[in-house]
Figure 1 (tube, rainbow, N blue to C red):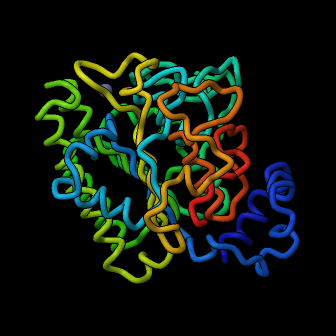
Figure 2: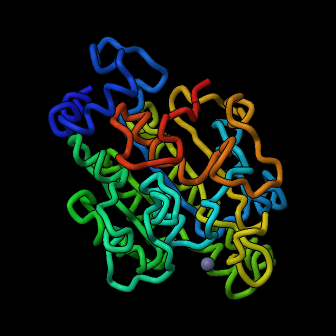
Amino acid sequence: MVLRQAAASALAGVTLAGALAASPASAATPAARDSADDPVNRVVAISVDGLNPQAIRVLGRARTPSFHRLMRRGATTLNARTAREQTRTLPNHASMMTGRRIDPRRGGHGVTFNSDTGTTVHRAAGRRVASVFDVVHGAGGSTALFAAKPKFALYARSWRAAIDRFTVDTDNARLVRRVTSELRRAPRTFTFVHLSLPDQAGHARGFMSAAYLRAVRRTDRLLGQIMGTLRARPALRRHTLLVLTADHGGRGASHDRASKPANFRVPFMVRGPGVAAGRNLYALNRDIDSPGSARTRYRGPQPIRNGDLADLVTDVLDLPRVPGSRFNARRTLDVFG
Ligand SMILES: [Zn+2]
């Protein structure tokens, strides 16, 4: 794969040393390595803001056909976790992009706030914080961030050189049309899509309310459009990994209390070439303990977290891990079986 050679030259030095340590076989003879993720050369990540996975159960297959199709064809769980510290939007998306926890005194990314104040992640952390965009872009790949909330400008500002396209559109349907149009025309190596309908309905009318469930159904249709676009083109279908998760859930008026299961429980869904179809991710990953209903700490056995996304992406693209990442930093999360 061309990207691998680009990775070797662009990331020569410290990060390549990391890659060598992580995967000696691939570093010695990259082209000869044969693994389940070899067909994957691009990733589309979708984060559904405020998606309580219970909504997918309540609505069922008839009313959320795309989420259920993703579960039938992919490796998934409805019992992943947010970062422990907070169940809010900007901190958890920063975790998805960096693979870090939140608390900057403990190696976290430092995005402890939930509105864009014009700062950068690096200033918030007090040091430079690398992202999955840096790794993909540094290896010669192209990247895009599509967001339904303007405050995602925080990330575009922070990783300006590594995000080739940043598009904000608060109209979710129009945002998805922009995504599918780019996927058809000139797909990126890594595309991150943020959708916001459930969170908006939740704040207006209550999380898990009838209005909220309607927003999840609308999101299911938008997900169907993205999945349909990937399916319709062999070049995309055969080589694209789709990952879907959420920044937090919610029940009732809010999602702010990080100790509530309805807030910290999120979906984590993966589908693509070679992905173990219809498998539960905890059943597939015997060494990762299902957390049950526990909130989980950072010590001891780790659950699958939304922040596993960053290094799942680097793993399937055969790139070095995101420098400084903690979640899934050893790339133990297996989606292929
Ligand atoms: Zn919210």
